[in-house]
Image (cartoon, rainbow, N blue to C red; front, side, top):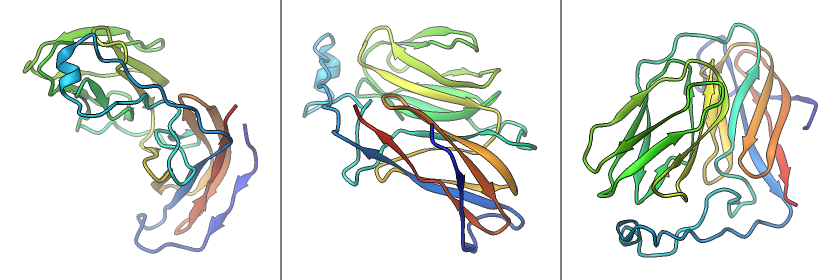
Length: 230
């Protein structure tokens, strides 16, 4: 767990609403990159036919620029952050017998919509501990499955009982200030009210870290964190 307070950089006009600031940074990796394992989809010929090349596990992946994808970044603690959940759904799609996205965030009471594009049967198993655990079978072409989470929970694992290589993670939060890093390892949390916060970063393979961040109106607080491999 890292400490310190993130320093604010000069104002960035036009990025956040007046009177608010933002938190931006990158999640770096130091050490020997893990060797990603190829996924054996041979149990289901339909899944095999969906791919022309080898598919590798996503946990433990490191970007070419030395950063981490699929890191879940969120404000873990701060005052006056809670608000109503958005009405729009967050989508988790089954495509090519993989979950897309691999890591996602959603607010308490916001709809989660699970869709399938695959011509094979899936069984979505949401292994929650704080929230209600559920699993639902979804046939090809069947309607979306829609559920809500009633409590914050970091993170909720998801897998498919039919295809054990399928994995996803859901970060259920009580405020809208969260992000998932992509192919360059960066994140931005916009429209953050001024104040001091605890930022937490979760990864499936390398653990979690926290950092104190001070947000000032019209400024960008920089929060770069580094995870180390074994």
